Picture 1 (tube, helix red, strand yellow):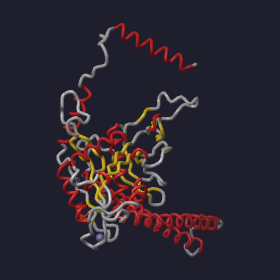
Picture 2 (spheres, rainbow, N blue to C red):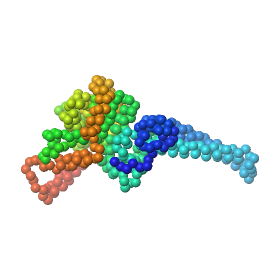
Picture 3 (spheres, helix red, strand yellow):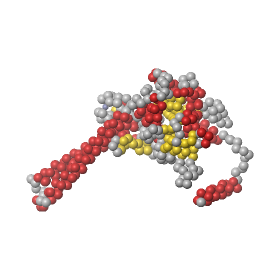
Picture 4 (cartoon, rainbow, N blue to C red):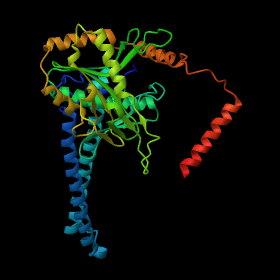
Length: 415
Ligand SMILES: [Zn+2]
């Protein structure tokens, strides 16, 4: 956890500053709900007021110009106080400076709303990750992609992010999914539902175990429990277009990258997201068979749409579901809401709470040690020797061969 700065929440309703711990709950001063949706609504109203003041300013600027032109006709007499045009100038000038002050106050309010919108989010409570603009750069985790928060256009929330590293991109993707789902839960879209993130589920022996018999873990990005289902969500934020399609043998593959104009796909790669999710679900089924029915587990792989996202297979084929963050049929909360309508209720609200409590206790990563273990286990898995035919010693000759191969590749691809 990062050190939480002396940040306070600005109440959108009464304008008081209250401690961050009231986020997600009620303002202790006025009782208003301090949740992202309420901030978004307040920001849309403020955006309208800003537009109104901007219009007002434009009108006043026009009137002032007109009055000055009129006044200039008086020549050397133009500074006489009794001239109506002098009066008009004074009036418009003071009205303009009032409108300016009102607009500036509204812009400042909008910044406060954006800032507190982030700190009122379930994401912030779950991760404790501050905006980089609030903490000294020395004390901020390098994986933190969240730079600052703003409302843009007509009250659209926008996080300014720095996604220089793969890790930061990943976290940003997780945030996008988490924010969509927690907002939908807050709006009551899935009935009684709870969301967990970063669960480490021991995979057990035999499952993906390597040569060293290490106990491997499956890292689940997001898990949502409703009264009807348990959703296991793998989130990917790849900086490339994503196409989900059928491969040979009825399999589903996820193509990452854009085929060239000549149709060659040699530099597209197949993303392992859905495959990883299958392993997560397998591990969970194995460990929690007395608490979770296999039939209620749903695996969804969500790709953040930043360069294009298209799905050419039916949802649910091979038990895989695909989602993204942009509006449309594949938008994550919409997909889940659709799935929920066709499923029977299998647990009570208390049942949801009990299961979430159990999963949280058993698999969440309170102090970060599980994440460390997990990374170490992955490293060991990659290092474990794999038999790949008789060994060929690496020699200078080998290196030269590779260089030759590369040169030939280049030469051929140019044709
Ligand atoms: Zn308040």
